[in-house]
Image (cartoon, rainbow, N blue to C red; front, top):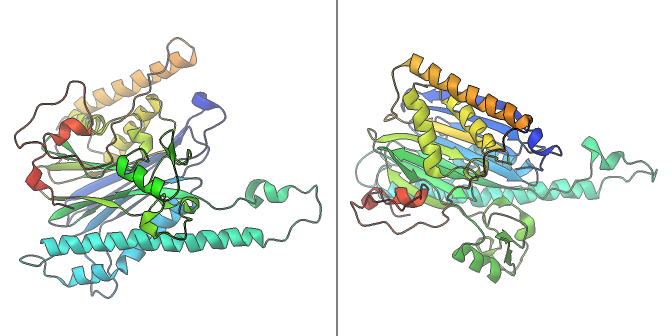
Length: 420
């Protein structure tokens, strides 16, 4: 997130930073790409690790990996701090040390309920501790501003401009992550960044958005002395859970999990199905504002079947397509290819499809520049902020015109999800 560029739709910054990686042991490939878009600053961050260190353990968990996207707002301090410190805080969690001591398989092992619960407990602890550390860091930054010597020249505006600007730190950030173990994938999020899993052709949620207008979130906000207006906390903040945002966590009579905005994550947990699990997508709301979960999943799969094998290129195509659909936010997308990912064999088929796709986009952009056609209408995704009741097994019918979470939840076999 960030302030909108002055020039509006004519001035998107389309330069992308794209990274790629793989883990041979875990049989996963991944890529992430970010673009400033129509914002003046880039406030998104992302994180990936193909092994997890645990303090006190003899060796890292080399068969585990973690992927995360952080969508900052009000500045990039919170998202940057969280991305930089997340793994260190996780490594120090007592529950992670307990988990590392468990056997890999069997009863009461890492792959059993006991192991999954320890990881959930550790991630809960990371979000809580990061918020405590962030409050201290932000307070130090603000104290430094208060204690900074004032200029003797009343006409000297240097402290209010550029790098010397006296700006109080009040930023926040969402966080969505997926932790992969050999037996489970554990989705964890606070805010409206989102993760989805494509399994056997179906799109399944790995997170649920936290919006202030949801009943449970709105009740907590109201009980903490706030209100929801225009679907925003106190008419301002568009998410009801986030790291930072301490102006909404100022009620000293309430614990951290009862404030207007809370850092507490929710979890969606699946046992892994190596042959059916195709890929995961993690992205900020700059993607989901203009594409539903199914649309984004189908888009990635379409490029794969056209022959593209470079997930970094697919990430970049997704960003360009969302900008074309009038996304006005920073955009970051992270795609993780799993062992069951389906690709095509024809490179020629892909080259023809990709060249055609990009040529069409360039023609449309040129026509828009000349005022010949209007931009594509802005599309909205289908965020869901609370788990829905699972349908009766075997139900496959989709509501007419519904291409978001709702239709694909009907393809979810309830026993596959571990109750969180």
